[in-house]
Length: 414
Image (cartoon, rainbow, N blue to C red):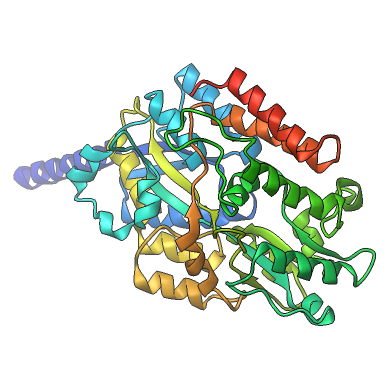
């Protein structure tokens, strides 16, 4: 009887010890992101639930901050030494964090876990390499296309956009659609940094010389490009002025049926599916001397000072490469998952509208990346301000780009 009691006591102690050990091994990581802000938070939460079910010893504390405040908050936490274990960076800001040594190289963790690089889209994966080292895994990537309102094209008796369209074809269509009514506009394409760096590539221009040692902002090709963009507002008025918008957003203008074409990203699809009560589709962006479209990518990185690197890597690896996370993203219309799983790509292509989903994959062959320098934020702010002055008619495109060239040369070190 004593032996039985002793056995029961020892068994209970063993169970308690095992339970305590299991509890002690649970790791909680902090993850900061911006891209799930708004309606996408629920989708990231679904991903977390699946991950934690598959990894019972890892818990994830998700913190979401809107893009407008994200990088100020992130940099504040980095300086204070309170940065999260893992966080999201977009392609444009990634280089600065890698150069400053604030994020962890991932090769060792990738090798230790047998990470299969073939599962990741090669362009998206390469975007988060710096000086030959892999510092991040792609979270998502996307490009820009032309959304168009089929009903307005039909009313204006204009053929739908196709892959052979040029700037001249697009302008002609925009003029005819503008003629449909005082409150109808032909096109909206923001005149700001992210559009300008790409549209100059469609005209054979660049913002830098080949080895990134000199600004080439005010070249004739670039001045011609900005003139073309500004003329759509000031000369032809196929694109609304700020006053004509009256605070209305470009997505809202399109969804209201008052805009023939909208140059924007594939991330707009969920909004348009919910808000447009007319037929719409997409087309590859036109070019002048060449084709070019945006490459946007968001990556996942690990704080170099974290003591939870292995758990953090398991989390970002799941978000980046798992079929479960990719499927949630596709079904939500939340940008492109950066994976090569054929069944996921097939699912994405089959999810409509838009009907011409193949345009997304066609556009990928024309991707151009934004120029990446450590002072990227300052670069985009300076150029964006001068572009805005030209858009609003305060200066000519030549004057705007001459002023931008001078200010960039005086304030940014290459």
